[in-house]
Length: 85
Image 1 (spheres, rainbow, N blue to C red):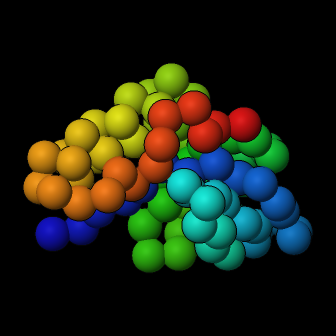
Image 2 (image 1 turned 180 degrees about the horizontal axis):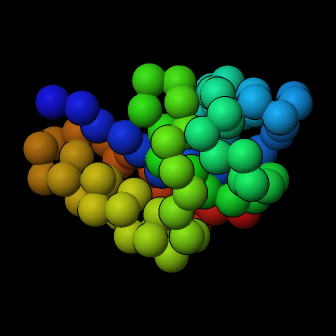
Image 3 (image 1 turned 45 degrees about the vertical axis):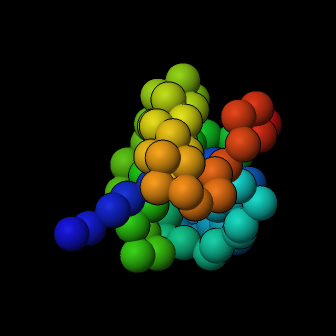
């Protein structure tokens, strides 16, 4: 099963590479598939590639759902609410 997570773009090196953040974790990803992404935008990330853009409200709902599932399984939250910039 594959899982893609919403993350916020916080830095951009060039047209094709940047850094996203999710719950304090930062990762360098390819932006080649989302050429119009800007700093602060949310993208869906899978195995080092930003696959598409997602609006902030949908990103927050998705992250809240993942955290709820993690809590129900006895795990720590994936992200805490209100961590978006």
